[in-house]
Amino acid sequence: MSDIDLKKTLLQHLDSLRWSGLGDLPQTGALEFDFSDLEAAPDTQPAKPPQSPKSATEQAPAKVAAEPTPSKPTPAQPAPPTLLAEGDYGDVISDAGQRSAALKVIAEEVSACTKCAELCSNRTKTVFGVGSAEAKIVFLGEGPGANEDQQGEPFVGAAGQLLDKILTASSLSREQVYIVNVVKCRPPANRNPTDDEIKNCWNYLERQLEIIQPTHIVCLGSVAAKSLLNTKLSLGKMRKQWHQYRGSKVIVTYHPAYLLRTPTAKKHVWEDMKLLMAEFGVEL
Ligand code: URA
Image (cartoon, rainbow, N blue to C red; front, side):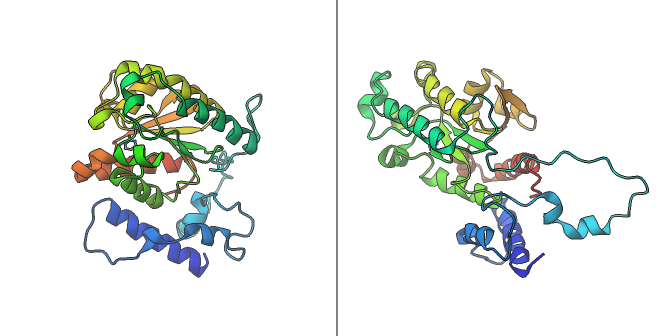
């Protein structure tokens, strides 16, 4: 492992510990650390695409080296999926530019949508979604709050800042994933969206997911989980297991806004993120 990789790993680990609630750790400033520069540096990651996370074996060479040599050859393990699109989507759109263009068409429809009288008469901006049109991981929230309504972008307020920290601690960035809500307009006074509002907006989300084709979806909170999985189960019952939405594996975790009110739940989200990232060969 190069010095720069070692430093990055240590900084991430410290941030993960701090983020998950441990205090009295040295400040690293790693949350502002520009990981993308490091990933792109030719002498550190020569053969890798810029946003691909390290495989489990690359992250923990010492552990692997310390294991006894097996007497029998170990069966080949299937390679974990990378976070980059492989352009292998059969009859689905496989070109990044076409995907972005297709998303833009829906975004324009959304910006002119008048299906929910109360929501559209109160909105400043519709909040369509943000991130990579080729993301392997989609984070699904509930609906825009006041800041999102002003800026037209999901998760930019206090809950969004916490989501950013969760992403960073998980070796992810906003640019690498896609972030979207169940409803695209702010419900007044931050109330939950009604069943009718969710129904009215559903087709937009459905089409976004069809275009992006994520391998994994993370439901943030019970509104997202119940809507996507069409269930009435509580969030507690849905956590810690994989669900399915069409071709995507779905995991359910707490909403960052809930974590702001209940910081003790951060450790549960961290467990969920570990499960998620293990799918990509990333050990947190
Ligand atoms: N909460 C959400 O569910 N979505 C946002 O975009 C912001 C806050």
